[in-house]
Length: 280
Figure 1 (cartoon, rainbow, N blue to C red):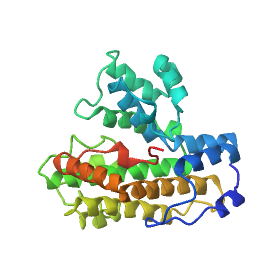
Figure 2 (figure 1 turned 30 degrees about the vertical axis):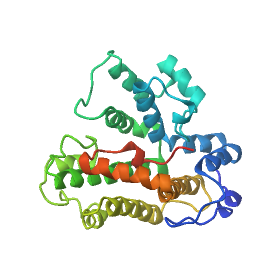
Figure 3 (figure 1 turned 30 degrees about the horizontal axis):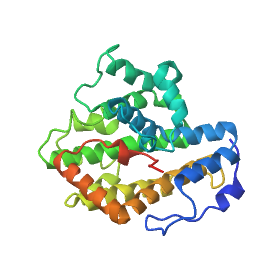
């Protein structure tokens, strides 16, 4: 893994309330394609598997898709993805499993889950073969954070979360065993207390999840300031800031209000909110 002091030193500081930036997440991704070594750029690509999940599920169930429907950055660019749809062997195994189960060549592993969540389960079952280092730690943290947030939201609304969380990881196991407000997880995951204290408002709830995510990034001690892990961590932050930027716009506010209504009606693990990336 290389060091990139000139790249990292030139990046502007990001905060959740950062003003608009001079470049987008997509531009950052393309900048990485030019400056990173092949192996390090491969790590950056693999940080965006959640967008591949979004593209796979959306384009499988929506045959009249348009070019702008494709979410970037993703591991597969749009041309690679279209080739993979024709020949599933070109995809990673977790994506091939989705097509097998949906096209009748296999059985649904988690039929109680929406297809996006089942595909997310496939990703996590293969995770250790796909990523390592910072990326693996981030994906694991993201799983526990989103599963916990989903579980307490469902429980608040009187819905049993045991069959609705992604059935893998520490939180999923605890949800099936404990009736405590924090499912007995505060000692292992201290951030659970902060989330539990902000469940009354859907907006406050999502903002708290975002703060917990940023706190984790800031406390991630294994990230060298000028190494590839710093480049990856910056991508996660940039995605977060860019997402909230969009929600600050008038059209974004309308979209967010719709999203909050959906959360209130039926909350589930949301791939859209779970990982880095966004429509660009």
